[in-house]
Amino acid sequence: AQTVTQSQPEMSVQEAETVTLSCTYDTSESDYYLFWYKQPPSRQMILVIRQEAYKQQNATENRFSVNFQKAAKSFSLKISDSQLGDAAMYFCAYASGSRLTFGEGTQLTVNP
Amino acid sequence: GAVVSQHPSWVICKSGTSVKIECRSLDFQATTMFWYRQFPKQSLMLMATSNEGSKATYEQGVEKDKFLINHASLTLSTLTVTSAHPEDSSFYICSARAAKSGTGPNSPLHFGNGTRLTVT
Image 1 (tube, each protein chain N blue to C red):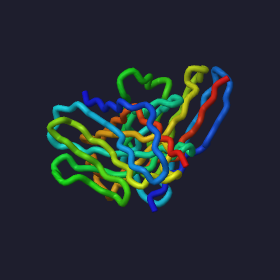
Image 2: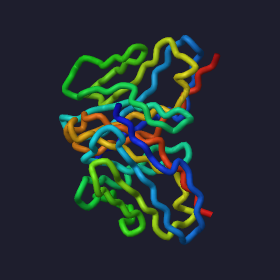
Image 3: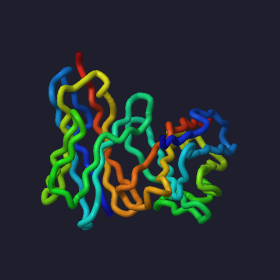
């Protein structure tokens, strides 16, 4: 079974600074997808960024980028120029087939 | 576009009663819908996968007779918590995958806003 591990229950960052959230996963599949979701206090799940495992190039979405290390099964999220609105719970997720498996989450606090 | 409406957003019920939660795709057809459960400050745990017109597939450890899932149309899936107990109190979230986007893992998932269930 696939597992997703986020080793940082909580992180904090100063506004305008950069923060990196860690994620590792375990799988025997070769074709899969990885995601980062954001869950603000409203509890709405918001897709932040996605990465196809077969692509070597790291995905980027404006201030959000990933460092995908397939051999190490690592998928970290970097948030640049952090904003107060980035404060939320962030979940790393793995998908192969139709199922989506989430990590435990990292609560990100942005300090003004 | 791609809005998923979940209703109710919160519900309080007495122990022993049943509660139905609806998940509707408002502007797209969803062949597959997923039901998750989330305890406070914890991750989303997949409970079951429902496909339109067929029986739901439940995850290991989820009681299918307690959590009844019906996906009768391409725009509606329901989760009924039967004979609810206080330990069923949780946050329930549905997500839907659009029919036209395929069924692969890269197909976008659209999430509802969730339902907070409190059983007294």
